[in-house]
Image 1 (tube, helix red, strand yellow):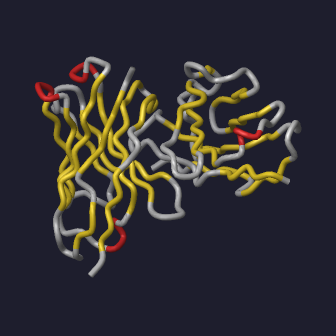
Image 2 (cartoon, one colour):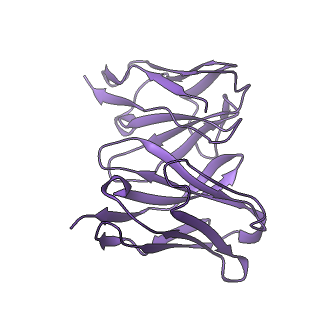
Length: 116
Length: 107
């Protein structure tokens, strides 16, 4: 069974940093491209970042470019999102999602709240 | 960036009735269109990919159709567990944009 488990969310002050993790199991992690998607409270889904299997190709949404960094460790079956210079607009549930062209499996999400 | 527009924003339907959800792309995405269901407090779940192919375990009452810029998700006979928010997403080009969602609520 495919499992994606996010962690690392929490309360952070504006301008602060946070690192999210996504632990993958039940499939060959190194063979799949991965993404982060977020959802602000009461809002829709927003794609945030993409990373290819070998991390050779990375894309970011314009809203996070220059502040967020996606990475992966295939040996540890883990995906990461380093988030810097956080603002109130980054408050959201962050999901990791496996990509099979479309996003076929999602984690349960981790909540990031940016507030003073 | 391809803009995905869903309509209506909210759909009020009685159990057992049919629901028809629309999704329009600002430019052609071919058949690279997925539908997701999200229940309150849960992660999204893939329903349909390739505009019309069921994901694993999805019941046949969910039917996707369309290509190019116009897509439809039809739920033939709404069950209690189908009341949720539905999102379309194009994966033809980056960024892989989502529609704003259609909430299907009990009438």
